[in-house]
Image (cartoon, each protein chain N blue to C red):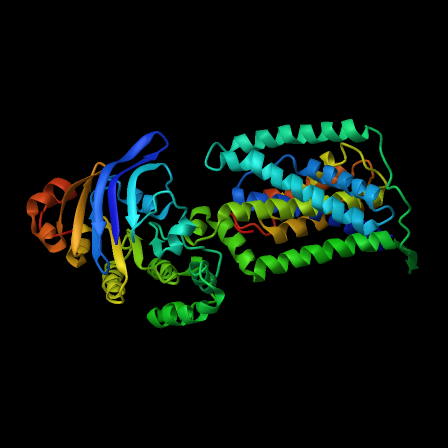
Length: 240
Length: 290
């Protein structure tokens, strides 16, 4: 479904990615893990088209989407939940969700709204409230729900558990599995690598803008050497 | 006396508002300022006069010509001064717009001359005196046109898909992009719309004061920027409120205190308000809105 070959990306003159290869099949959860500054978010920004200064090939459903703007990428069925959520704080929950479906024909929006309100009853309750008044966990739900409003085939999730209470974090990982079950492939970027690898089919460990190791999620999780070297756990194996 | 000053304040406020809304739209979305807005106002007014060469004696043609001319200049401003620097230094567009402003003034000076021109024919829409206040049809038309256009803009921003895209782009540029919004097009629309309103204001200004001249946009655009800041820069509703407040305060000062010190006192009040509410009347500090 998605095949990335020799992806390099720059922020100004600073190279953040040094030639990345990875792939993702339909229906998979694939995770990119690694320490801060390894380039995980840069990968997602390159895929969605926010970062234009890049080279290499990004093939999605047999098309090269490397030169596409975010609107085009979204139109082909890739939606993104960015790090920090980027919800619109002064727009209502309902307006935030409607913006998620901005690229879709207006007629199909009510049905999508119904579906999202069924998935997240708390958002239905707060539909008239400003997005900025929601709690951190609710804002994360809103950000995910907003991305799902576009009916994506592939969902890019950037640090969805960041800054959440442990209970909420648990909820997010359950939700990711449910999303996959509904037929949407997930590319998950996480600092919480233990949780991410536990639910992922496959994982890639990023280090300094390159893929250091790849493998099945649970296997990577079990490899204490990887944890110590690349993920920086002092007490390897027990997670965070 | 008071009623007459309030009426005059409403007229001046309407002219300010047509300019300040453009400032607010542009600053709200790009967080950058244009210094060419007053000259777009001026050049728009002159394009209205040009339209009269083709359709003599049609006030509507003058209005349409002013709006169209200014809208085109707004699009050029965006394309030349802002688009090339979207992710670059924030000062660059401001400097380019200063250059553009000088070019516009020089061009109009060259083509039309430095002398002040009246509106080419008499605009007699009637004149009424109601309980001591005298009001002309042109004055009513100025206030009415401004209020109707601004109300339409407000409704469009609050209730249409385009307005939602505009508010989203102002709130978070990149988030709007990953919603599938063509943010370049939203920015262009804001410039075209804001400039078209400035052109409308320019023609009404020239017709009301009977004076079209190359520097007609300089002082009023600074005041409109002040009005937009007073209302809460980046907030369209605030820009409108600020504009009418400034217009009314100026006329009250002129009527009751001193015509010579109207600007000094009006701006002293403005500074005072900003000391108390730094984000402006409707501004909310961190939050950004259109």
